[in-house]
Length: 116
Image 1 (cartoon, rainbow, N blue to C red):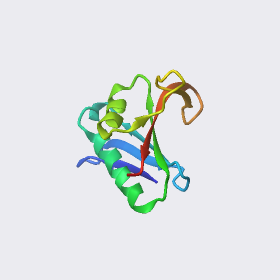
Image 2 (tube, one colour):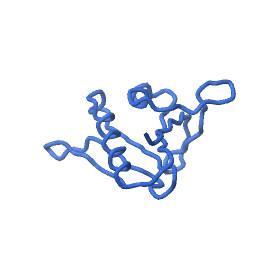
Image 3 (cartoon, rainbow, N blue to C red):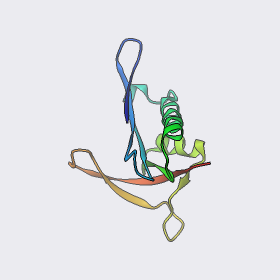
Image 4 (tube, rainbow, N blue to C red):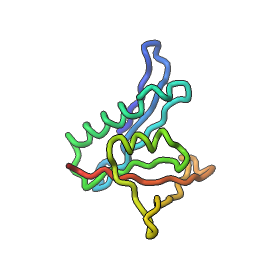
């Protein structure tokens, strides 16, 4: 399930979606164009995705990944009170994620959104 959002001039603002929708652990993702960042769109889009998933999907928990250096994306997770996965030393567990085209990889942390 993917969504593309445009402004009133039909200019692209963001894209977001849910991967593995039929699994017990679907994954939420988002991407906001540089010029639209800092306006609260990320929080708005993730809240909408979660509401949609809660209404239509049977899941154990949702996954939300954040690049380790992306403070804004991590703040979205923290505002919602999500649980970050920790390693054995109680530090953020780092996962290696690859770009869609597999041309490069980057470090992410995983947040879990449990059903209430």
